[in-house]
Length: 243
Image 1 (cartoon, rainbow, N blue to C red):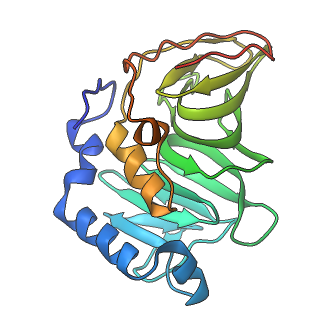
Image 2 (tube, rainbow, N blue to C red):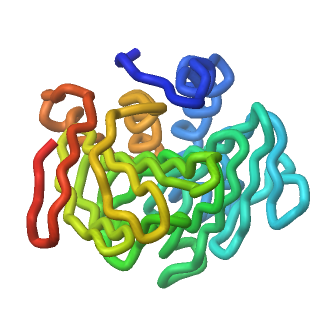
């Protein structure tokens, strides 16, 4: 397991990829053909549910599928792993998110986060975004970790783990190009982006999510990792930085 720093999260939350039930669920997902087979056979696209979650205000049941337009809410000690279209998601405990429809019913155009934390991997494409109370991230094809902090200003922590992301917060905009973790704070509504350390997520989580949709992370492809310190820089587009 890669080294990681925690801030307001527990060790248990980032070690979920080591749980036996998760490993078994991922193996079963692969054996059954992954997301393409789930769509073709009209099976559930939920890979793993721990604890309780709400789907559009009602309890999410085993075997149910998630669709774009759905609102998802996890409770204390709960987590939800699912794949949809060309993207995969881990929703941590105490999160409230909505997945909005793209070009098709199964394609996500927008992940709207009110509270909580989500790790996600997206195949290459356009017109996909993550929106929080203080930040908008335009996704081109990447793996990211996003967390809305439970404080008065709902500040956002955002890590471009790899890939290209267009970031906007208040009057601050930047294009982040990363091979290995670039992290930002979006502190309050209207405040500029600022550099952040790498916290609350692991390489193994991103690798797991990438594998669900037949992808590999940038460091798996290159065989090279940098220093997981965050180290983001900000500047107006078209300034880019390498991680």
